[in-house]
Structure formats: C-alpha cells, structure tokens
Length: 338
Image (cartoon, rainbow, N blue to C red; front, top):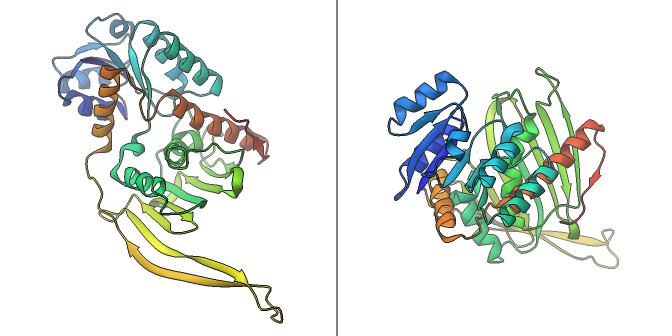
C-alpha cells in the first residue's frame, strides 16, 4: 500500500517515520510548499517522490492514502480534494475548523466510499486503552466528573489559539472514554501573545445526568503538566501522561452518603471510603505506530476507524462552541444532539 504525505513541518516527520516502517506499506511521496522542508524530506526518504504540489500525490496511482499534516485552515480543502481523487485520508487534529466542513467531509467519504480518519493519537496509547477497558467493565461505576490539565511553556501557534491547539487531545480522549456528547460548553480565556489569540483558556462542559468536565489549557505555564482525573461512584482514576511508568492509577476511594440521625444537627452523614491504589500494566508501544497500523488495516478491510470522521466532528463541535463562548465573554453555548 502506498501513502502520500502532505506537510513535512512539525508533525509530518512523525507520520512519515511511523508509516514508512509499517509492513506492506511504502511512503510513495511527500509534498511541502517549503523548499527547505522538501529538501529535508528528500534526504530522509530518498525513494519518495518529493513535490511542492499536492496534485502530484492526488494524481499518482501508486498512492492509496493521503496523510495531511498542515495548518488546520487547509485541512478541509486538501481532504476534500484527496477523497475526490479516490484516496483514503488521515487528517491531523482537529479534523476541520468548523462543523459544517466536518459534516461535508463525512458525507463525501460516505458518498465515495472513502476511509476518513482523524489523527487523535492519544486514543491509541496504552494508558487510554486501559482506562477505556476499566470504564467499559463498570469498575468506576457512574462517572461524575472529568477534570483535566494540559499546560506548558509554548509552543505558540500563529493560526489557532490554545483551545484549537491543545484541546483536541483531551476532548477526543473524553469523547472516546465517555461515549456521550455534552449539552453545553462554556469557555473563558485571555490572550497574552500576538494576533489576539487566547494563550490561556478554561472549558466547562455539562452532560445529561449530571456529569461535568473541566479543562485547563495554557501556553504560558512554567511547568509541563498532562493530567486527567476521572471520578466515578465506585472508583477514581488519575491519568498522568508525564509519569514515566505508572501513568494510570486506579484509586478505590470515594464517599458514602447516608441519612443522619433524626436528632442530629446534620441531616446527612458523609463517610469516606479509602481502599487500595492499583497501577495496572500498560502497553508501551508508540501510539502513532499503533494508529498507523490501525489506519492501514481499516483501508485494507474497508472498516470504520476508531477515530473516524464522526469522532472528529464531535471534537470540532466542542471547539466551535468554545470559540463562540470565548468571543461572547464566557456565555454558555448549548449543543444540540448529533
């Protein structure tokens, strides 16, 4: 199977490296508008056809699938043209800038029988796969909240704010684990860089049944933190991606609420349940390698990817609502069911 890569900037080299080593797969061509990046790709992959024009890949019969790793503003047009040329597509996160564009790509993939996938890399980590297994097994009970922090110093983007840059990681993980869409989104943030784009933001999501989710994103933090708390009625999980080994810890902790004595000044009594902490064994395969293998299998078998167009749409809808909330000073934006 032949793949072509559009974009050899920040993320493109990672895609090229992982797809080029997959069995029965070859990197046929690389396209980048920058002569310097194109020369670098040529040095790393001398057998690949190097081009400055994406049409060279779209028209190449040896290319079965297109990998897109360019600024998000170009995702829609390139993915659309690739599918119209008969290619399957993997698009770097987020899928598109708007939900209208995402809907159109999904419909185009359906109409032309194309595989459309989004590079939600974290879904393929051993940590997220283990958390999914724990949640689906009912060990956490009813999930009450998700609380996540993704902060670091830089990397400032010149085309999107901190929400569009960092939030797709955590939102895609949340959507995959919870399996529900929020009913409302609220966001506040501030810009402390150039181009009046938010460099700090807080997102608050409400779900049916009382579940809430809160996210903190920041390009201006003195430390790098990648931590998510998931609170269930039975157990709780701490997922710390910066931990070298024990990235997932399952705590048998919680509260037990029972009626108080009729003569007590407290109408309810809260007992605290404290049990063991378990750090389950995780797969340590590189997530992008696992994702590359999965995408190629979906292309060969014509099966639906884990992170398909609809998964990408779910994230884009939240990003779009968050942007609307930011622009309105933190107004709550309601989301209709898909």
